[in-house]
Amino acid sequence: MAIERVGVVGCGLMGSGIAEVCARAGRDVVVREVDSGMIEAAELRIQKSIQRGVKSGKLSEEDAAATLGRIRFAKDYDELSDRELVVEAVVESPGEKVAVFASLDEVLASEDAILASNTSSIPIMKLAMATRRPHAVCGLHFFNPVPVLELVELVPSLLTSEETVSRAAEFVGEVLGKRVVYSKDRAGFIVNQLLIPYLLSAIRMVESGFATQEDIDTGMIKGCAHPMGPLALTDLIGLDTTLAVAESLYEEFKEPLYAPPPMLSRMVEAGLLGRKTGRGFYDYGG
Ligand SMILES: NC(=O)c1ccc[n+]([C@@H]2O[C@H](COP(=O)([O-])OP(=O)(O)OC[C@H]3O[C@@H](n4cnc5c(N)ncnc54)[C@H](O)[C@@H]3O)[C@@H](O)[C@H]2O)c1
Image (cartoon, rainbow, N blue to C red; front, side, top):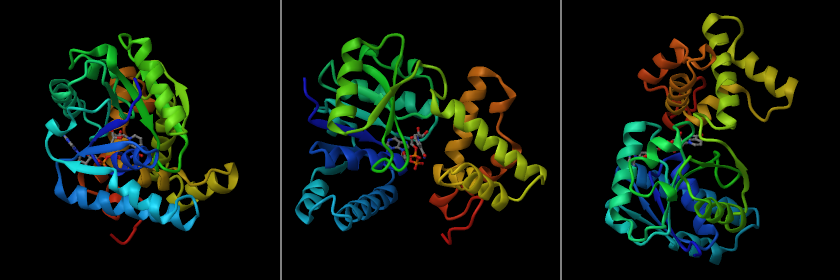
């Protein structure tokens, strides 16, 4: 069964990118978002990204208009009922995500519609058990910015069917043109189990006064050829998301390397979430 109709739940940084790449691949996309302000911001973000595609010659003006025309925003779950794949991309909170999965399970008409989560760290089994169709639930972990970064981690739970895995892999790999890697269902999957301890170590270095944030970032850019340093990357990901991912990892493994440093918690409490709020480790003038 081909996947022609896609749903996305949550339209922040990631949901808007996922909606965009699916629409660019010719799929009809319905996006459910609860916050009207976020819908406006997402529309703007998608338009800007598509215009960059036009400027770089990847998209014609006609393709750009058609892509935008394939994305529709909705406030009710009912509008997702005919979807063949829904990707959940709400905040990194187990409670919020479980509630979204239970609601999607109620409305999706087809028993085989795939319910995927873009979670960075929450075990997929926790989400699958909120539904009556755990065979059709998997993790599809995209990377930020979605239109630019090629990777998707595909995470089956113990109960995901082989058919779900192969349909999801075919969609992400062949329709969206992404590179798929497979991970077992453990908090953080492959990339965040490696990345988060690195980001937290950089924050601990700043917190202890060991080095300045500029020097830490410069060290990793100039010394290790990373495209950006760990503190600028934390600002890009969002400090709230980084904290939530660290908490999931710590809950799963109880290893000190995953424990969030107090500095990160305080900055999140202060609303210094990084680029999305205009200030994190750096000031973006927002
Ligand atoms: N930021 C990253 O770099 C990154 C990378 C990969 C994966 N992720 C994961 O993607 C998910 C979303 O992250 P983000 O960075 O886009 O967060 P974000 O804060 O930018 O966006 C989350 C959006 O979800 C919306 N939302 C919350 N509850 C909702 C509900 N019940 N229904 C519909 N919308 C709802 C919020 O209004 C918000 O617009 C998280 O699970 C995160 O871990 C993030």
